[in-house]
Length: 307
Image: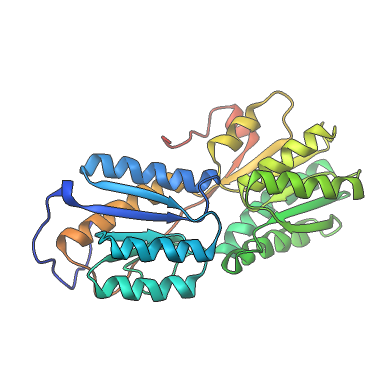
């Protein structure tokens, strides 16, 4: 991989002395565990020290964690932003101390590496897979609950993408609920409220596997199973893939956002910046994504990255 580098490093460092920290919004979310897995793999190959810190979905804690990373003198810090503005301010401070910065998925300015994504397009991919299933199996006559991540301003567009796809492909499908649920426990709690209000619910569409898993558990527990029920989500985490393989599973599809690849490549890029100098302009990458249907999973056409 070649980088256009602008500010030369003073001298190459012994890899064993290099330290990189990742601030994850929530390590209970399997997608962020995937980023960490990719990070760990790259760090082991390079022989460097790496740590992932759980922000526990708190903007305040993420800010405090990153301030501590700066104080502790890490060589590079990368994060998935809970508050992009605050993160950009902290990254400006980090860079003033010669620390390399990066952000992944939800990015921030002042990142030497911006490994981003198109939230709306990604949500539209999730919604398209779900809407096409509804068109084929429900003739667009049914009810769907959305589990989104509207609590994170930068991710709200993902839910909007889901809505756009459903209304374009299957306009008669009724969206009866839209609540944020970015971990399995909240997904379960929300669905325990939604199902009594809509006992004839047909589908759950979640913008992340974590919420989708919670939806799947409660749908199944309430007997909302069979050929006319479905759960769709995004991330293609091992947890979701396992549920898709279950006998008579209503987990019909997800979308692979390549967390392991993103975490692995981020570390490689940040390492090169530490050793050879930071770029004059940010290095920009996009997380790739691809639809993963239940049929692909069961036929072994889809293989998880090593996590």
